Every structure is written in structure tokens, then in C-alpha cells.
Image (tube, rainbow, N blue to C red; front, side, top):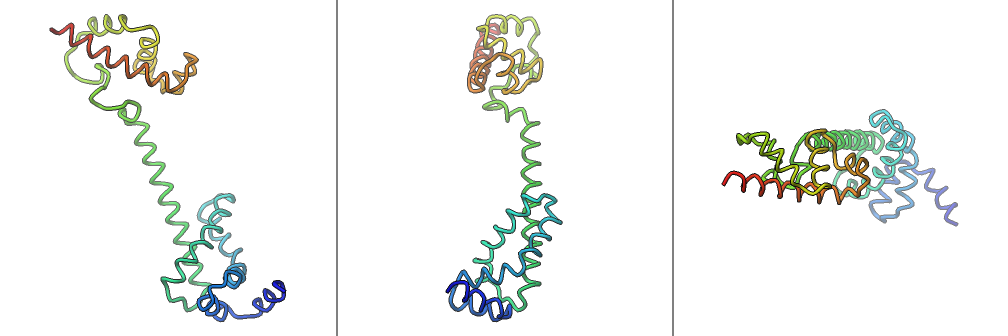
Length: 194
């Protein structure tokens, strides 16, 4: 029976299907209408997103977006309206992806991203006139794990993951050792300045 109904819908015009969908909210009707242009939607998505998997995901997301957008817009001719909706969706996705990549790039270059707070930055990161001998003495006074983490992080520019691999530790443990080492260095240096 459902196949026979779907067959009946196939012969209807776009505007008739759209009117029927808006009156009855029948998802089958919207499915038939969207299926007519799925290849067009996929092609536009592939053109903009340059990736088959992303284009396939976009086809599904755009169908879901139709549910809200059809209520918000008066659609005269479905095909060109769907094309514009698809193009705008792709452009917004590219913009969001680009912003996310830029933000990640900023975070990776931001020293605060790898440390809990800038107030607890390594003494070498601040221009506070410390002499190297006092700092080196304080580093040598740290526990072995803390000292190794500090040297790898600050002197060899390794990230948490790389330090964890070198020292065969969990990343959370590396983070903990670095936090404790920074605190201990700060206390040691303050004690030396008294």
C-alpha cells in the first residue's frame, strides 16, 4: 500500500508535493520531494566540501534542516530554493570548520593552552631578572619525575603527549607533574629571594 501511495506522489509536481507536505506534515511526501533532488544536493555539497563523506553527511543534515526552514520561508519554486539552501549550508559549514581550525591553531601556539594558568607560567617565561644558577638549582631540587617533565616541556618543547611517550607515563600524570613542579619552582625561587 505504501509503495502505491509513494508511486502516486511521484507523479505530483513539486509545488503540489510542497503544498501537501505543508498541509499534512507527511514525512513521506517530503521524502519523495527531496529524493528528486538528492543528487543535485550531493553534487553541490561535493563541489564545496571536496569530500564524499562530508557531502553525504551534508545531504542528511540538509534534509533535517528542511523541516525547520520550510516553516520559516515561503517557497515558490522548490528546486532553486533548495539549491540556495544547500549552497548556504555548505558555506556555513566551511566557515565553521575554518574558524575551528584557526581557533585550534591559536590554542596550539598559546602557552596558556598547555598550562593551567598564565599566573603559574614557568619562571623562564617571565622577564623577572632571575639568574640561571638559582633556577637551575631549584630545578635540580625537584623530584625526578617533575624535573624530567620540566626539562622536556620547557627546554625541549615537547607537548604532554610526547612527554608521556618518552617517560612512559599517562598524560594526566605528566600534567600533574608539571603543575607540581611549577608550584615547587615558584616556592623555591621565592625562598631563595628572601
